[in-house]
Length: 414
Image (cartoon, rainbow, N blue to C red):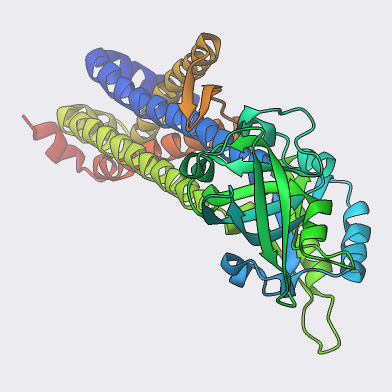
């Protein structure tokens, strides 16, 4: 085997230009894939962090059927005190959970005393909310950020603030119906303006949880949703599966599930963009496979045709077809290893250079977000094994053709 490897290495050295061009083509493919994976993965992770840490949390718990009718913000699907305590008990026993926030979601009429419009509201306890969504204060584009919100204050979405000409410090009125249909109004001071976001959340304001209870005349504790933040988002699949099993197994007196659990992926439309990024990564990998396959196969076919006499000679002196097959397969293997090694080295150097240069970009009103391309050892190894495997596979047909040549016919070839 060692002699075959040595002979294959010498054969590649004999055709330096072809070996160089083929290995560089493989290198280019490897670099393109690894850089795309690192940059797109960094962008995807950053955007997920922005969405989960400033708004959604990693998971949310609702009463069964709430999410299906969330557009109408139904108050008759809130969790009651007993259900809330049960959820707290389960969440408190889970070490992977860093924080959670109880929220009441409601719709109301928003008035500046001259004009009226509708508004969606998230009622929260500031300390809990900042634990579940630590980047929430970054969305406050005007007004005091420290402490998030106090009783009697409201954070107004930018869309409504501009349309109603409302500024920080103004007094506004909220009018809301409770679940029994009675109407109640309450005045608030505008504490700040929230950055506008796409989708229904663009009309979401924020008030204190105690103000929501007063506005809706709630005699008993009620909660619309519980937003959960994990210590590590990589634990999301395992924690979600565990929470889903524990909570959705609880039944009411009609033997129907009480709770439903959803990850941010189910709630946010950005998940579709994340899936598109993953799909693009898959297409890039397929392109890499095609580049390597065509390159190696072309080189090996040309090597067979150019070395027919050589093949006939070594066959005539007793070299078995199996060794001839192995010779060409190892040549393809060595080309793949060479191109992959150089490609991985260039990619890692490029990723280090991009991190050192501190590339930044803007996302909505978020400015100066730092792009931090990273790639795991597992992804590097996977790409390397794919390239080397395809290099060997591409060598099989030419190698098989060489091993089956008749020595006499090969020696007569001109």
